[in-house]
Image (cartoon, rainbow, N blue to C red; front, side, top):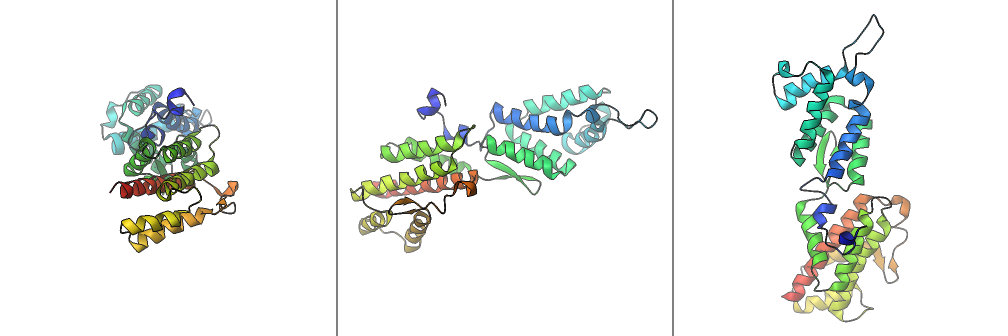
Length: 276
């Protein structure tokens, strides 16, 4: 990671891409489409035997694209296959970020290939996009509100220990070459523990003890309190992380994002209660 990333100067929204798309993600999506479809010889050139030529596949694709997606007159397309592809490429790299996802949905629907969807989802996961292709549609896995909760937990230095743990959790999650989901989850949980220690003024205190102390001065709904305790109990005990739940082979990026979001919201909630 570079200096700005290590020091926390990079906004969370630039890491988990929900309301935008950086060049790396856009390039990655194009490269998948090009490698799997647009760059194939049969896509641009006529194919088949000398006496049984078939038109290049870009012709059928572009007719559908112009008619159903661009909604332009198909007779206005270039007469050269390579120029048609150049126009498609120009649109892809010039359009607004969410239009890229519209284009992806069109391609996935047109080709209806599970393999293409799998390659695209792998790219979206690698670049920490806040979306995945599910049942042919681009669906959000992370909301803007969740990203804002993470940013608040990292940026608020009311409890610097908790902020440092949340930043470390994000760093471990966003490492493109070697993401560490297990330790990202551990850091997210440690942020909650850090706030709990501050509330109870004891490093041996559990979250239950912190909530009990907080409940004496602030009314906490029993269901909310139980939900917090169950989430924490699912991952932790007096000795730290439950190793059975956090077996490396079973963890995914979705697990790490879930705990990053949940623990960020948890930390922010506890901070707001203390401030009342």
